[in-house]
Amino acid sequence: MYPENDDEFEDKRIDSVEKHSDGTYAIGCDGWHLWCGKNCPVVPEVGQTCRQYGKGIGSPVRGLFINGVKVWYRTEAEDDEHTEIELYGADAADWLKRWDEGRGVWSISMGGLGPSYEQCIQITAAEILRHMLDAKYDFSRWDDKDAWAKDRDAIEKHGFANDRIKALGLSGAQWGAACNLAANLYQRGPRAIMNDERVKDRKIQVQRTFPVAA
Image (cartoon, one colour):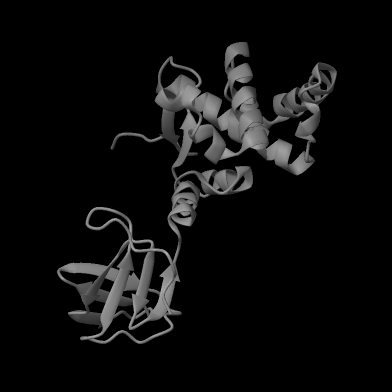
């Protein structure tokens, strides 16, 4: 009924239940609210027991049981992974999908010379990454300098023909920084990059459309 060896929970009485038009539920417990999705395996009712897994007030809820029925549950390690994926993207393809949708994505500052200069690098990195994913480069070869040089030439040829990149009028330094960022996203994925201690002070949020003050 409940997960074994996980004592990080609180049992509370459900004080209120509100069903929304989309089939989800807002469940009130001791002044706090949780949401139960459309596929909730139990219909929440006032008076039922709500067991919440997590570190308590101010921390994410990583598990919810109603009257002993599991609504969702993640171990602490699974919840850490879930949080990272929600923040950074599951992999390079997910990162690029979020970028294309116009959502904010976490990245690494590569320029240090102002927002417009940086935006050009980030746009170029996204376009290079798109090409890398489409071409399916074998990055396991890139430890070999000759193999990397060959692939880099192909990447540059494609990049210099990309209309979006050409319109930016990049410097050589910007191109190199963008290629470096794209290669790391492609090889290591966004989660590994964002957890790299070497760049922990250079994390930034960017998006496809450069923000403009109203």
